[in-house]
Each structure stands twice: as C-alpha cells, then as structure tokens.
Amino acid sequence: MIQNDQELKVTRERMSYLLDLLTRLRVSSRPEELALVSSGYRAEVERMQREVLDYLTKPATIAKAG
Amino acid sequence: MPLPAFNEFGDLPEGIHRASLAEIVSRFGSGTAQRVAVTERLSRIHELAAATGCLDRLMVFGSYVSDISEPNDIDVILVMQNGFRSEDCPTESAVLFDHARANDEFGASVFWVRPNMLLGEPIDEFLAFWQTKRDGRKRGIVEVSL
Image (cartoon, rainbow over all chains, first blue to last red; front, side, top):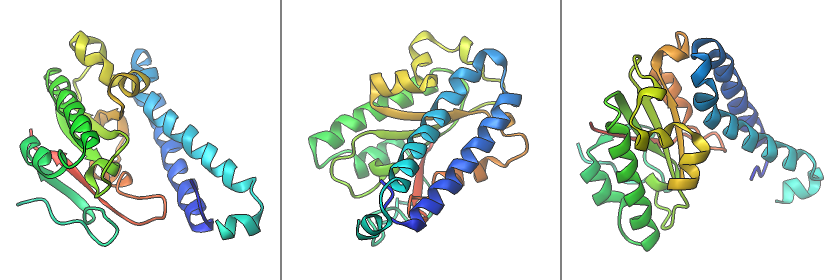
C-alpha cells in the first residue's frame, strides 16, 4: 500500500519500467510465448496500478496521516 | 562468501548475493512453519527450473530473503538461456512459466526472461529493478548458485 507521495513517485517509475519492458517483449518474444512471458509483468503492473489509484483517490490529508 | 547480515531495515544489503540452495535453506528456511513451507516450494521451483536444461540464473527476492518471520510467498526470477523454448520444456516444469499457475500451485510470484528479449538492456540492469522497494530504498537479492 502506497503511504506517501515519495512511494507514489517510485511506484509510477517502476510501472513505467515494466511498461517499457512489455513493449520490448511484444517485439522480441515469439508470438506463441508472449502471453506466458508477459503474464508476470502484466500482473505486477496491474497490482501497482491498483495501489496508485487507491492512493490517488484518498484525500490528501488522510493520505498524509496514513 | 557467506550471506551478509540484514541491515537496519531487515533486508539484505544492496546487491546480488550468491549462495547455494543449501546455504539459502540454512539461512532462510527455518524459524516458523511458514518459512519451512515456503522453503520447500523454493526447492521444488529450483528442481523444476533446472529440469528444463535451459536455466541460466535463478534469483530470489522479496520478503523471503528478509527478516520477516512469515513471508507470504516466494518471489523468483528465472533467467533462461537464449535458446529456451517454453513449449519444449518438461510438462511438470511448464507451470513455472505461467505466472498465474505458478502462483496457484506454488504460492510463488515467478518472473522469467531470456536475455535476448531485453533488446540491449544488460541483464544486470533488469535484475537491478527488483532490488528497489516501494519507498525507493535498495535491497539485496539472492542468486542461487547452479
């Protein structure tokens, strides 16, 4: 769970890296293996996205206190 | 070189720390029933990954290689040789290369890659990504000596 703006920044940077990785896997993987090799990175992006949205939809005062 | 002590945050110092599976089991595989159970899963993952004949490196990261007494799961990276074809690996090993199946059957979060998939990014830079925690701090990860 993201607890402050610093963690939000780091999570967004990590998401950006994984999205770039998926961009490369889309090109470098054989079509028949793309779903498998990307599955873990996709799950990680989705998890991070949920955490980002949970944080961004929480009032800033509560977010800071949390 | 033995595995280093945990830092003040309960993590290994930044970097990749190499150890045999026996050393890893000795260091991280006891203390709670949960740790014993997760360690058995790691041993099985190691066995299945090696059975492909194409395993290049196996890294363990996350709460298992920290001072947390009851890690929920085990986080693993499989670096496969560039000639690896997932459809040609032994049937039993195939579960490792499907993230959801590996999670269901082993309680493991398995990520895999071949170096040639990274399109020029050095494999050590890819591995460095997994050393960054949510707060931006760096933590060490463990490479199982093959």
